[in-house]
Amino acid sequence: MHETMIAQSLLAAISEEAAKQNAKPINAKISCGVLNAINDEILCFAFEAIAKDTPCEGMKLQIEHKAMQGQCKKCNQSFDIEFSHPRCLKCGSEDFELLPDAPLLLEEIEFSTGHLTVGTD
Ligand SMILES: [Zn+2]
Image 1 (cartoon, helix red, strand yellow):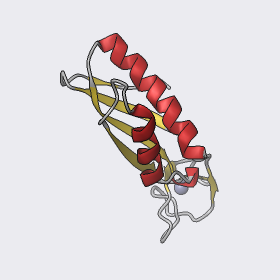
Image 2: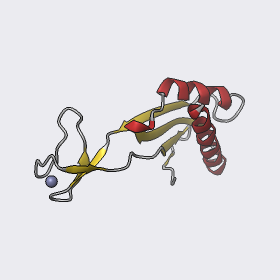
Image 3: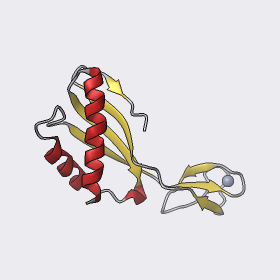
């Protein structure tokens, strides 16, 4: 179960930050590439299940799926690929290279104190 492993590492990272801040986390923002194939519902469900009886119990996960990035072979511009219309946003060229999919990233944790923390990995 891909999502369970992700949920476990998220829980570990958030718990560590919560201990540092000495505050209860209420919300976390996560981002990942579209090819990462994470099922939001399964991930939230897995997280809820393992967060039970921890300081993370009841917190919400928001998952943002980032667009694929391309890099133009003509002008070197990197850009978000629109699947319906894949072309360089700067010069309009359709000759581009696909860049690696965005990794899963813990972007932000919101604590009950109102403090926001941005994850470093
Ligand atoms: Zn271009």
